[in-house]
Image (tube, rainbow over all chains, first blue to last red; front, side, top):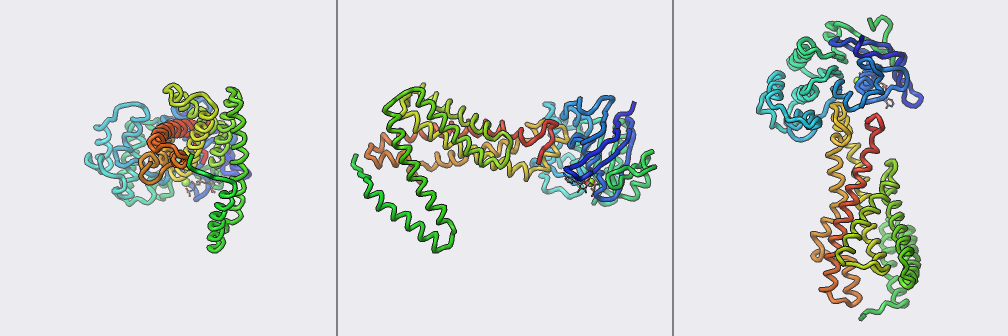
Length: 217
Length: 252
Ligand SMILES: Nc1ncnc2c1ncn2[C@@H]1O[C@H](COP(=O)(O)OP(=O)(O)OP(=O)(O)O)[C@@H](O)[C@H]1O
Ligand SMILES: [Mg+2]
């Protein structure tokens, strides 16, 4: 059984159709790359999958059940979305990494946070660093860490490497590969990066709100 | 009473309004019409209320008193709602918050023996409590609207991480409650130093011993702190959920 199943899914705002006839199934531990021109509806599609928006037609099933049966909060802890232009909140890096624990009333796992920071080229001392002092690339990495402090089952990445230099990109992708291969996370990644598109194991291309024919294998 | 305000002196005091009008006209503030309407309304409303209160005090009926208090609360709630800028259910939320803040505050004051259930005390005090609660709630609404727009991205990020509505809105809630209470707290800090509040001024004006007037004012300060804090907390806690739909998605 597929983990995520979209059947004739559509989304419109007032009279504007943004997504239509989206049919897509994604299996557990699959890595799906989504590409397509700007404004084609990529972010809208994954925000629907992340339950941050609601489809206006069709079906969306997760783990065998329609999304409507899930409590949105519990669902979002299983299907985690990392924003196209993330903002960090609070004052310090720790405020951000601790947030996933706070909302679950769990004690903060400092060791795990430090290991995560080291994995993405930061250090334990950065926990106390004010978020305003981080570089753009560092912010992006901290934002991504925030999504995986407590593992979701599905990690949705909306152009997380856009604007990063090659070194930062490599950090981020090696981390995501580790989540996917070693920890079994399902990955849905939007990208404009030609190299990332060329390396995709499964590529889906959206144009004007529809999946290109032959785009979804 | 060593004070005489008669109709003639009121007419002469109208000259003060002319000064304001002249300034408004000279500086082209475009507020002359507003000001004239404001003055006329104030005079008519106050005279009507004055005569109404006089007869209500004379009748001294518990149901009539309660009805008037409820009317005050409804009006205050309606006014607070006008500041909500479209927050759904703002009217019931405002009325509920003002009702509870007024009831609790009045209840404590009565239990403490500070006031008695007579119209001459209950009605003016309810009015003070309700109007301060109203202003506080209006400020809360304005801040909620501004903050949810300003902090939209942060709220979305928190939701995406699986925060419930309370955790996603916590900073905004805290800030809004504080905003609602701030004028009362500032007022409490400067009372007597920067200004003599209306009630105390009125009492002293009317010839009451300042020390007695101060005791009333201390009570009023406590009472307003309680009313605005209860009103702000309730209104914010009820209103913030209206910024989300039932799928727990942010509506802005
Ligand atoms: N709430 C909305 N109301 C009206 N139009 C919207 C709304 N949300 C999105 N759109 C429109 O839907 C289209 C798809 O937007 P979306 O953000 O999904 O595109 P995208 O493929 O992610 O683009 P990019 O590559 O630039 O990030 C755009 O034309 C956008 O203007
Ligand atoms: Mg996008």
